[in-house]
Length: 123
Ligand SMILES: [Zn+2]
View (tube, rainbow, N blue to C red):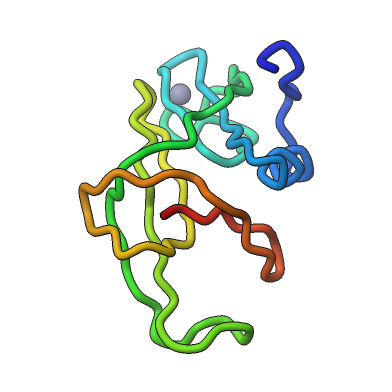
């Protein structure tokens, strides 16, 4: 599918891919930095020389927290994590965490949660 990646990557295309079970991101041609969500310019060096890339759907928990006041549709704690996708460009995605995984544990993209916007779920 890498020959059909949208370029430039819009929020709508990122969202559609997410609902398809794919994580798209961008890699900076100037410094190699990667992001897991569409940006108009590199957030490290400001370059607009960015290309769309398909990111791995497995990674490790970089950091996590539990939000005590969950979104309306949920009861109790709502766990959110930043997942390090282990790419050379250090792409990280913010996701809902459904398992009891802790920092450093391996997790995989398992679902998409529809709140106001689709959110990746890892566990
Ligand atoms: Zn850059």
